[in-house]
Length: 193
Image (cartoon, rainbow, N blue to C red; front, side, top):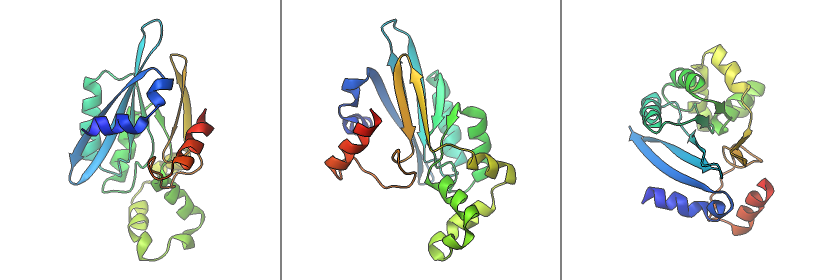
């Protein structure tokens, strides 16, 4: 049912790009990580499988389970679409992502870290206490890595262009649900191509 909901949410995407989308959800300690396998086939019948992970939030145990699942699917590329940090084991998670992934982009959690380093006064108060506490635990080398991440990534697979963003192409922290505003949805999808 979950896979069907994601396929339904993709709407006309599958009509424009010949691909197969498979969704898997692994739950550990009330956290979840979602990965999407995109199998893009060309006229030559070459298949490229891309796993897209997002919202790991420092949950290294769930990440390890997902990576084991990805290995069973013989994935060609792994893309992480942000929010590596924001949970219990940020350094272990960052290091595993650095070793396992082909492409990584910044999510809102990584953006909060960058913004906090630029302007520490901006993230005061109870609302930001957890973000500050997690960010203090991140090793300096990992901070440099997270700060270097781009906000989007573009790639091609078998002649198909793929653009990946954490939230929208304009923002890493904009809350966006396809069903909330059809005009906004069409504007975002239309601006991609």
